[in-house]
Every structure is written in C-alpha cells, then in structure tokens.
Amino acid sequence: MVYRIGADIGGTSVKLGVVDEAFHIVESMRIPTGEICTADGIIGGIVEACRELMVRYEIASVGIGSAGLVNPKTGYVLRAGNLPFLNEPLGVRVAKGLQVPVFLDNDANCALIGEHAAGACAGYEDALILTIGTGIGGAVMIGGRVYRGHNYKAAEFGHFIINMKGEACSCGLRGCFEQYGSASALIAMTKKCVRAFPGSLLARMAQNGIDGSTAFEAAKGGCAAAEEMLKDYGKVLGVGINSLVKIFQPQVVALSGGVAVQGEYLLNLIRPNLIDDSVVCTTKLGGGGGLIGAALLGTPYGE
Ligand SMILES: [Zn+2]
Image 1 (cartoon, helix red, strand yellow):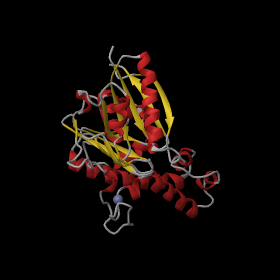
Image 2 (cartoon, rainbow, N blue to C red):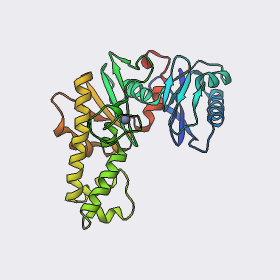
Image 3 (cartoon, protein in one colour):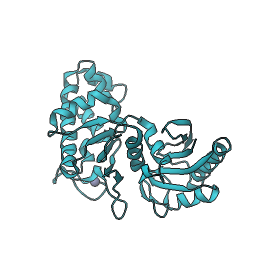
Image 4 (tube, rainbow, N blue to C red):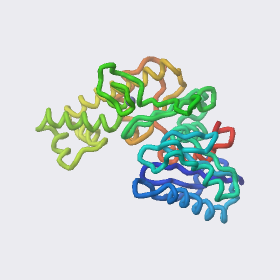
C-alpha cells in the first residue's frame, strides 16, 4: 500500500494526515496556527508530525495546501492573509527536513483536487469549487487539470464585480461578489434584518449573538423575515454562480466553506435563481477534501 501525507494549512490549524490509495484518511492530527504562531513554528510542527508518521507508514510524498498566494513551481508562499508567511519557502523548508518529495499548492486548488478524486466532482473533468466563508474563494478545473493562471492568481471568485457602483473592496475594486455573497455579507444582512424586524424570531435568536447560521436557524424555526432575507441571499449567490457558469460551463459547481454546511436548505435557496443546466451541490469530503487533495499533489490527480 502506498501512503501519502497531506497537510491543509488554515487560519486556525494545520490539518495533517495520511491518505491511502483509496483516498481515505487513515490517520490525522491538528497543529495550531493563527496569529500567535510563527512560520518557523508551523514548518517545524509539520516536519515533526511527518517524521512521526513516517515511522509507522511507508510514505511516498508529502503535499501541502496553504491559504494565500502560492507558487507550486518554486515551493514559495508569497503571502497568506492572517498566516505568518511572506515570501516563505514553505515547500523547500519542509523538503529539507524530510527525505521524500514535497509538493505545495493553494488550499482551494487542493480542495478541488480532493473533491475531483473522491468527492462531489468525481467523474467530471470540468468542475469548479466555490468556498463561501469570511470571504469567497475557489478553484477551477478544466479538462481534468487545475487552471492556475500564469501567476497562480486565477480563480479569485470573490473578486469579480457584481455591482459597479458598489462598496470599495480590500482588493482595490468596487462591488466584488464576496461583499454580497460571503458569510460576512450574510451576517451584515442578518443584522440589518434584526433592526428592521425587532419583534421577529430572528431578533430574539440574535440576542445570543449572530453568525452565519443564525438566519438559517430562525428560518427553519418559521421566521418569515429570516426566510425572505435568505431568499435575497440565495439570489446573490445565484447571480455569482450564473456568471461563473457563463464563463466556464463547468459540469458541476461544488460549494464549500462555513455557509455550505447548510446543505440542501442553501441549495434550495440558490436553485430557483440559476440558469438552465447548472449543477450545483455541496462538497462531499467536508473539511477533509483539502487534506486529501494536498496528499495527491505530485500524482496525476493533482495536476
Ligand atoms: Zn474585491
């Protein structure tokens, strides 16, 4: 049996595990990251965990998915949001500590590779993943290969424009999709709805705090104001997905991230707004997709 190690570096932890030839995670662990951690600490933690696993498994390669702008050819993370990486030779440094090939890619690309091998995008060659969290990210596969762009900046699906006269975005543009479709935007919509309907179930539930699931819980509990608000949110996501479908004509669009845990309820909000022949679903591997995809880097599945 050939085993590979995959590591998925996120804002709060590194999910690291051993993946077998059937794309199953046979063992996994978490290493904390975030603002308190240094690049040295994260890299040291990954190397240490790999060494420990290599005692027990015959490991063919190590793959790492990182948030941010990643150059898979050089093994550098150029920048990565709240992670402490700036022109960091992450892949190079991990490879130095281990005796196996080490591969690096963007975390959304890894999630798509994982879903294509063993999840919601299996059996499709043209597929797209849309990650709806604090912002919106994603990745695109064309003819079975991830499309990265000449500078590895492709598939910034949070930053195409759906409102020319919209709010200024941190990327320098105005009216980007993520300002209307992200979990942060959903939370802002929820707060506005609470102010407009102070007697609603949503307003009562909001007294315990508001997050990306509050409106869904209120709507499921029969709150008409929350239901109407979520219909509007579904329209926004429909606008974004329709634009992506017009450009890429993927066989499937898989949604991931914090909002996608709403599953069928979310899909039913979006579907009435979609143009024909769009297939939208949620990811199947959940949080494990990025780890599995990272482990497949350097194999034909990871191209
Ligand atoms: Zn933007």
